[in-house]
Length: 260
Ligand code: SF4
Ligand code: SF4
Image 1 (cartoon, rainbow, N blue to C red):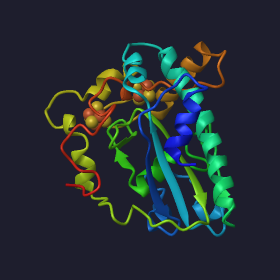
Image 2: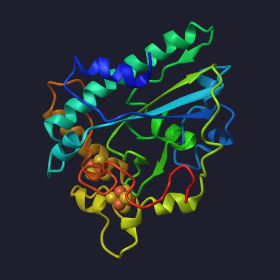
Image 3: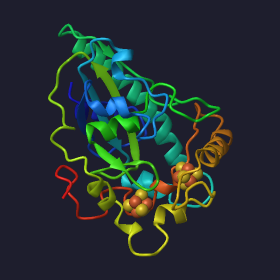
């Protein structure tokens, strides 16, 4: 069953609706996996340490609809719609991972399904095993914005997932330019001398033009988790991804596939 068909089927039994997903493929031998520390993913496992004969990492982005994103364009705690979308999409990512494992398994190939979230050490906030975000960068599903989220062709407001598989799929990272120029062009609202909108949206002091304070950010995420404690763990915030130029699309004129 195709990713789009599965999302459609799920949407009949859950509240959250989505825009069309994006998919990209990284080779397990991609040299960037040896440089995970350099791209801020200290503690991240190499795909082959999770699946010995891994050949491909399937990375995908499930974009939230505009109404979910706009609901979170308010100050303070996350909107209920945003929290529901987060919780339901985590479940969807897990189901989708196991679905892919089953169908790929029919061809005789093993697949490893990483957890949809919380793949980090709660004390150091360093990725302890697997970061869907860094994998999305390596597969060139998008690249990091100033808010440290991945900006894809359909923006940054949504959820990323990935699986590691023995199945070979031609990788997209080789055909996509990973130039620094491309990454910089993705944040054009950082060039006009004004405070970038993502920083204005972070009223918690976590995001500045110099860096993201992961501890302050996680503190706000835990405030949301406490407020929405009747849900499965909702340790999110997402204000810097809501109501900003890159929420739903790439804000500049750059073509992410060519980097121009
Ligand atoms: S709001 Fe602007 S500066 Fe901030 S991440 Fe998005 S594109 Fe970049
Ligand atoms: S997720 Fe929330 S706390 Fe973290 S940087 Fe974005 S706006 Fe700030």
